Image (cartoon, rainbow, N blue to C red):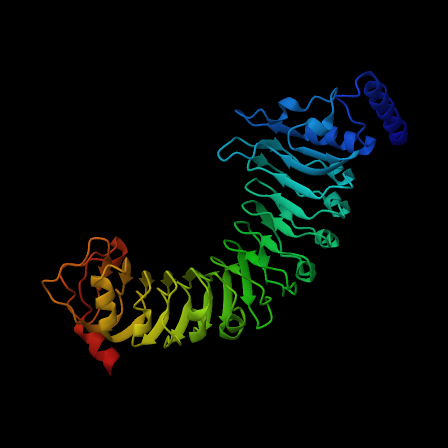
Length: 398
């Protein structure tokens, strides 16, 4: 029955092409039928007219978002890609797996529901898969690992559940894996691809420990924020010396923060709200623009090598002693924008009481073992108490 229908469609396309060779290409009948099924399963959201050009009496290779080579569809970009444009609603039809030459598949943010069809595993040439900011649910099929040519997988901002298939770690050509803002659980599989540069798994329900060889040294962007990950990371981080962005915040990581981490070419370092402990000793002057180590269990004296950081968050730790003089110099020179040191056990800062802190800078020293300078600006989360109770400061020194 299916072969008969394909023959009828092919005959129709052939006859129509003879009538109007300038406007209609002879698209492969399987691709033609697949596009029809995909169209029936999806609808423009109010305000979108993406499908207005999808008139199947004309050449499908001229449809919006459809790109062909010869008689095959090689790229399918569903929805208007302009920022803020309404997306599509409906489901992804399993017939999408019939587009055998497809190299790229993307769907713009919208209200697409249902699961990812298992037929995606038939797209052996697929290199780019991006279906983000929709309502895709269910588990990620391990059969996707059959797509050995995949370079980018972006399934972020959906409602995916279950675990990350361990087979994802065996992709040897994968460059970008973006699964953030889902409901994924279980442990993170080890990744072996030496081409992997971006891994974004933040805002899931992942748990377990990370090991020294969990990620390849090729990584440049790593975000694991807002999960339930545990254990130490110092041996792992020491290897990832190509990182330019690192966010491990809001987990339950423990142990020390390695000093050489601060020499990596990172522009934004987010390690806040964990259980990191011990001294923090950079091996050289820190040039990372933003460093957030707040809400941990870090202790000892604050290293003067942090004085060149533009936005430094060391609040809600167990630091003690004097604020380094180099911090004051950077603050008065307006090279520091944010210096949050509140909720520690600091005992003093060498600053002239009458000195005016530049308006561009924010200094907060509340709730330490000292009376903070008058001209300080603190966030509401710092509370109203200016200093720690004396009993806490004596106990901590002892």
